[in-house]
Image (cartoon, rainbow, N blue to C red):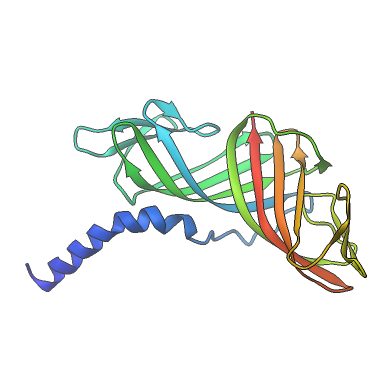
Length: 227
């Protein structure tokens, strides 16, 4: 085996590991097109498992098992797309009113029973009407997106009714929270609510830093697109 053949063999052997471990951490390259002020966008790593003979809820992606040649028979909008580990599986659609989702994934693993897709999900919610509180319903699609917000004094955390009110002797003061309104550095801040009747959010944040004029919070937001 010559040097080129050995190099090619090494690349092929490690690619499934890259697909499984690396794709979920790939940065999402978003469009520079401005969005309306009542529109919010989230990007999240995803790992999705589709069992043989089933449809990925909220999408037109399904899986019919391994082919005679050993490929993964992924169905996209009813059309068979034979896939190998590392191949792309992209989808874009509207799983709920005013909600657009784009999935950019690759095949991580597959067998006769299921296929696993890893990559990124982009969620855009238009016509946002924020409502605090409530309980989650049955989700068709669910994402966990990392978020960081740099807030000016009297500015709301996007997608919530929580406003940074400034620095006090008790710590950073936030309006719109239930109960005790003060947080000190690295304290947790949680919030649940809706962006519309079909999109439920749960924020798990921490106060990174704050001054009299601004605050930085970061953490994750769980986005549930419901039936």
